[in-house]
Image 1: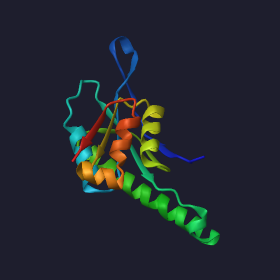
Image 2: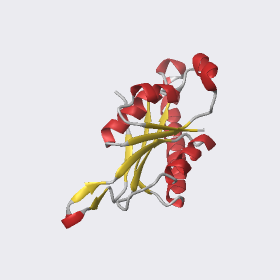
Image 3: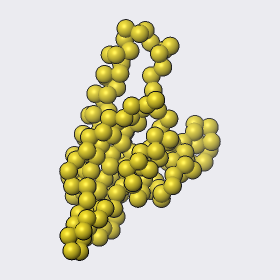
Length: 164
């Protein structure tokens, strides 16, 4: 079982006509600290928005650490370092989201199969769209290297915005 750390931020819904609450349009953005991920944030900021606004959910997925790869005594240190790195990546991304005039609804740090984790979190959070940056390796690159973007597109139940 994989553990997810979530930090939920206020303002996840708005009031519609006659004071009824309605969900904001929610976009899950996968971030890894790269320029490609930052481009995805900037692209989402350029999307047309209704007056109700747009809420961003950020996720960073790290590869799991397998017990056989490191001594048990070092496992806790490795896990703490991984979580610290995730927090830094998520905080930097959240700052960029806010600098682009968007609302951060939540940040999530998790580990596991990257595409599966992204799609699962999109479902859990009720995201309307998934956005992620790509390295633009093309068909041959993704054939040999595998592609998180391709996995997300194939598994997703919502539209996926891929940004180069």
